Amino acid sequence: MDSQTIKNLIEQGLPGARAEVNGADGVHFDAVVVAADFAGKLPLARHRMVYATLGDLMGGAIHALALKTLTPGEAAKAG
Image (cartoon, rainbow, N blue to C red; front, side, top):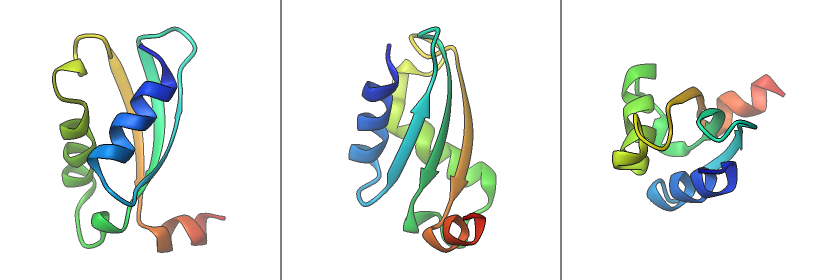
């Protein structure tokens, strides 16, 4: 598994989302995902939305995925 594949899956599964994914070892990754669809949702719900885009890869080809999920407004404030 590679970062670009995960990025593509997230962005395809959450239309309009922007994802930045890093992970050098091929099984542990971290991602920042910015999506308007996260508005009004708690962090757990946001994470579930991202995990849903990856399906069976979670816990398999992707051993761990650390997530930071933001709305576009939150991302703009974070700078």
